Length: 292
Image (cartoon, rainbow, N blue to C red; front, side, top):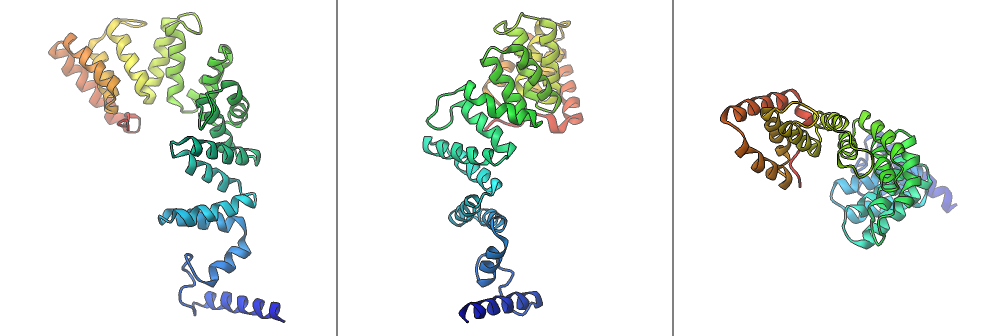
């Protein structure tokens, strides 16, 4: 009898809400309706409620709801919990992030699989960087067409001295919009630490990275124009790319300008400034953002 009464009460609440008769029915932070919805909706409702609580600044409730969803097998809740722990710098946080990413990856979430590989590669938590351990999850995510995973896979393959495979994956990453992949390829062909030096290829890859908005590639592109490596010397063009790179306000870009400016005439500076302004106006989304 008590069970029937409970069902009847729930039904009355739901009908009343639909009719707009009960105050607070739309308030997902409290009230019996939220409990009914959570019971009816399962882990997805807990996941959405967790996100809402986090958005309202209620970290404790948000994590509790996400954990409830995760315990019921909700992969996105596992991923979000991993991201929350990964945002903190402590070793314990890193370990917890890895644990959640492992669970989400096991549930088939590609973003978590990529983040798990990155955590292994960078030595998150109490782990040392481990390219070999990072390889399997990054391969899974890269083969699932995750561009960032392709970038990290390429870098891991460099660490494992599998250079031809690295070039393949870095190229795919660059073509998929990962601008830093072009910079890494440029470094491979310029620094002589992985493959035979090829100045022309290095210049070409730095150029792709620079045009795509990578700050490091822009600095190298500037240097190549200044010194005439792989191209004709052009001090104004060198200044252009140094100015663009300096939008990041990084110590490296500041140092590059300090080194470059005494070597330029007033005409070089004026021409370079004009070219930089034109490029930034034409490519507003690719202008480097200030470093944090």
